[in-house]
Image (cartoon, rainbow, N blue to C red; front, side, top):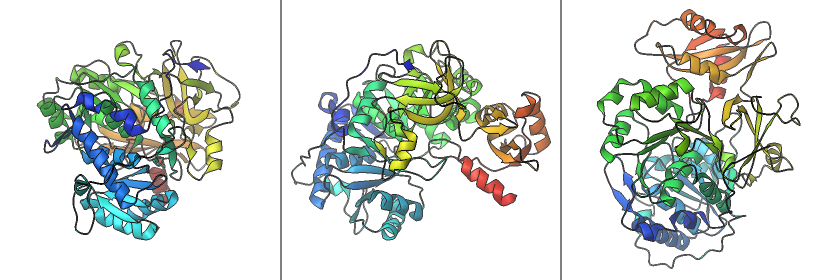
Length: 526
């Protein structure tokens, strides 16, 4: 068993809105949120006051403890106000992908029995249709304004009393994000107030922040990574969050330059853009102090190329999953220069880990041996909503959560994640990690992006199949060239046997490759 080197933390038994905004009065006029597109700013005093008034408005509208409110919005400066207002009113917040189809949205609404929706006017048609399909939704509110719908802006003028709701932080669900569905049907992940708030305290010794720090929020708040790293954590410590609704490279670079961003929390595709895109050189990014990547594997060479280009310490990584609130590992800011290339970090405070054999799950492995990563700690989810069997399959009787990820630690307890158990390609008994091949493919100058899955050949062997996006500078790149490039650099059993050229690699909002979509596309072609 591996334990964190940091001292254990006391569980934070506070509602999440109080855990995050407890020092709002102290931070007062410091900008809490800035719209990166038009400069609209909310101070800490305003954020605190506004979320309390909106909570009063929601309670007046009928929101009660135990209700589920669906927050359906891109990143805006109103998103945190809506989230904390809903939890203060006693609701659990299920966050919804703003690009979800009405049918996908309706499935989530129905699964969690949501009674309320908060959205933005451009997404209103989708929200209305989803509500019709799901049934049970009492009202749709908007963050901005739309005819026939109550607005959170109007609620700021509410004279209703602030709701006083008895919240049990250890039992009551604050957030109900849905797992990304990269390996199966999306499930509602029940995260209590205590689990989310305690995870923030667990991260604090390794990732410090405070007034004067400026974080750029381009990854979505609706995803647990964005909700924690870009919203809850910086707002808990008085940092300023500059908000962008989506990733557009020019807008992203301009925001770093114009708002003097000090910290980036991103996913590998953004690291790739920072390392390779010529546009990066046209902006002043000198305010940046560190970059951390998470949500998907990041190749060590790509991380080094990004850091070198930006003149920064090595790009750090973090590890976790929705079911872990989400953090378990991170490269501490004070150890950035000491972290070995490719590591996802060290165990954060109060967290335990086991690495168990893939062939014998009861056998614990030591440093240097790869197996499935198991995690135990106060950040482990309450369970999957309405799915006790799935919960039991994920969390064993001793409280260990089976991540489904394969990894190993070195002698200094730095963790290296190899791949997903279910995504490993087994070629004639050998295990091939798609992430390793993807990282290699990205070193080819003619490859802009790549993804690898396992497919079966005529002999029934599972073999690597690469989906490749050609770089604009290499429009004539052939499948033979790609396969030869890989073959010259890997063991024979790891060779890519098939190549399909595509316009873009399908990814979840978190940056994870949606391999199931590639498998479906391959099946259609076969």
